[in-house]
Image (tube, rainbow, N blue to C red; front, side, top):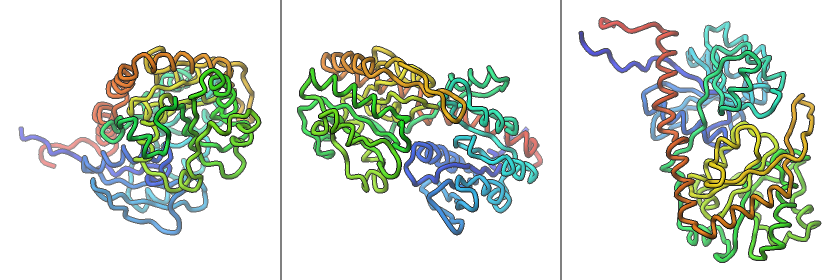
Length: 404
């Protein structure tokens, strides 16, 4: 029997942040889409932000991506239907907070004969009810974390778990002195860093608690400094003002706000992550926390909150430490945000400070190895994504025979 050809006739449409906007979602989608293009698939994207007015064929080294703009829905959800119809997609995959997708957009897509998979974060206990309502319409559910998978199982949903991954060839350690020179950071400080969105107040990324913990740490360690990279446009938490109240503003570094919000590159991320001694990421709610893995790929350990997906991303005492929750805050999404205790963040900072000071090379190697072993996008793509898509290809289009 002759070998069957390598089949690549299932057209795929991804729904999420436009691949060039440099959000966490867009970076992950870019890494996945490039690999599917390289495999020979025809790929389109229904873009959330970053594109308006008309579709484009966006050239990449791996192939051409058809990109559709937002239309009436600000998250690009309606363009799943219009884009799938125009492109001929038979499978749409959303990588987005699923609660933002209007149910009629999903129904229209499925009436077209296009299946819908959702690749989603689950970032609370209990799960937001509106998420569970949307998942009733999914043909397949893929979660970012074991925490998310268990939460959905508690609510009667079967899901597959595929971690977000990072390109370990793109993100790798730089020489720390070189990184600090590029980032304009003095070589002799002990540097904590935060790279996080600042979109609400109280802040989901725990800026207040992190600043208060840093105050306690820096009182004992005068050489300590804190780098905060975030967009602070709109109604976010007043970081500078709180730092000024705590009398630590002179110990904080901020990249230019316009540059950080609009112009920062992936090489900038690598530089900053390599310049840090420790990443601060004690989020109150987190469906994954890609920044934690990006930092580790660059050899930098992280301090995280002890909830949701975050404990899965570090090896406690080796590649990071965990803060403890002080209280739970009920939100309008009918779930809890888990507020970390500033003193427990401080204690975690002390532990990580001691470990990094004792053997920085060992910490860096352990961080890097954890990512290579568990979060390498190439491994996850070959062993998990391709298996799922090739199986879907046969289910949707039927099996090829030797005569086809």
